[in-house]
Figure 1 (cartoon, rainbow, N blue to C red):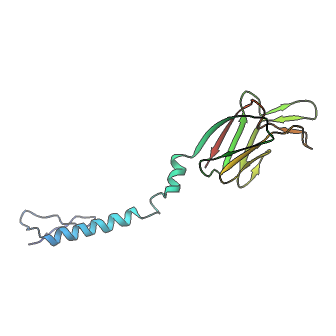
Figure 2: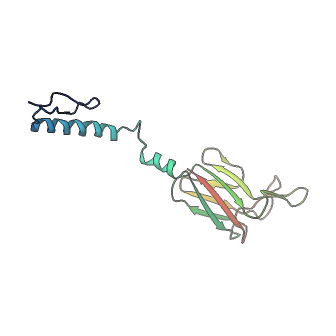
Figure 3: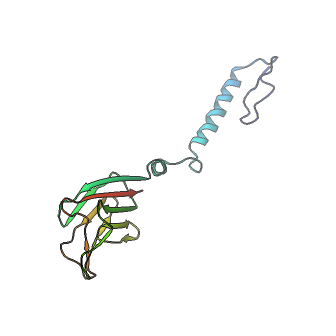
Length: 156
């Protein structure tokens, strides 16, 4: 006699001592397990996709660089980032040079909303710039000052 009782969740054979297992019982149990497990593993509403796992496991990257003094410097990124914070180490975020000029050494930049200064974030790079003179607002953007030390925190 085949199984006379079954498990509660998957309905697999739960043989009593008097039952005589048959091959078809094992085949049916294996098919049930394969179907249910396969449906579960492919269910993206309860499991993260590879891209979602990357966001959860590695939500940000910290990089540092030394300024070269060049007007513009581009860094190729190891993935896509949506937001970044950049600042020059050992300096305040803003430094008043005189009554009309300020050196800016801190920036917030996002792919969706732009930048608080002269820094750009693209799908695969971040572009920093160094001004030689103040712009019309009296700001000198200092994001690649020669021998300056910088930190960029990039968020996915």
